[in-house]
Length: 145
Length: 145
DNA sequence: CTTGAACCTCTAGGGACTGGAGGTCTTATG
DNA sequence: CATAAGACCTCCAGTCCCTAGAGGTTCAAG
Image (cartoon, rainbow over all chains, first blue to last red; front, side, top):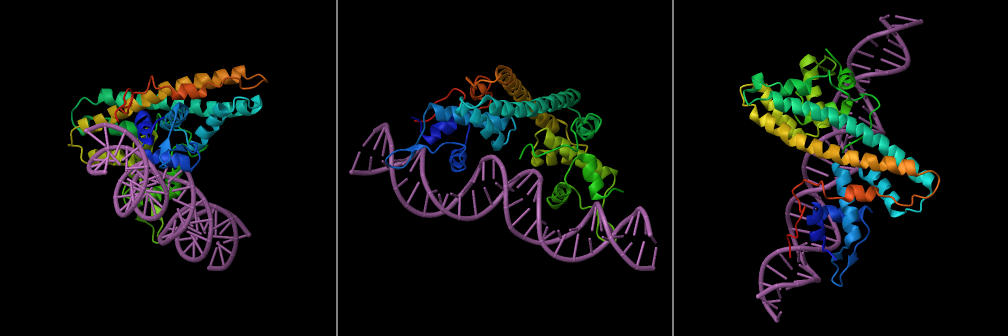
């Protein structure tokens, strides 16, 4: 049994954030001690780690919740799980493509930035430049908050 | 001279977001027509594109502001912008690794999901795994009593 | 039994937008 | 030149995902 503080430390999550997740139903209502303090077990740690990693990958809590439904109920009819997985896969692939482009940009920025002045540093031009802009300025939705 | 709508379309930015940027000082106060509508020029477009690309890279507005300050005063050393980019690159690379693992798992689920139940859903294990978790929180700890 | 760290609830704030109400300007067309 | 659609304006409230603080309680080591 972990305290909320231990859970937070193990997952890099602020205590308030864990309580917030409980409040909005991302985390189950924790068991309590007689004095009212939350106590967690391994499965809660796993779930929180999943949520946190999902967030770090840029998924919204809604998308994470959907994935958790798959994990929570492995007897779900296949069609439901499949469509969720399909949709998430599209998202994931788009993100990978974008991140790879961004990685290339960043690497170039760093390589070409040899410690002189900004006047000779193309960091800013590269970031400003549209030529490598792979994002589709049109079929866009809310990705990160 | 562009209207705000044109500027938004060219950069994939919502109009409200542009006005918000002006409000918080990320964008300069735009010139206005006699009727009070904003008109922009090339330099504003460049600046907004810079901001948007920075956001897509995962920079906060604060970090972007820092870089814009460097751009406005090109006698500053490059190292500041470089270290910002370095930090971001690490983040991006971590995200790519995790997303690739998640992609593989989602693909596996879809392939194996041929009309039965979601017998074993390993999505959770994928994202739960701490092995590639390079962030400095308790990756190996037990820090508190 | 005492003490100090860690916990509790509640409320408010913050970053980065996003949407809507209600009204004004621009511009293409008749 | 008149009109009307559509793009613009301000103001403000709401969203998402946390984060901080006040003021009080519990836990566990000594």
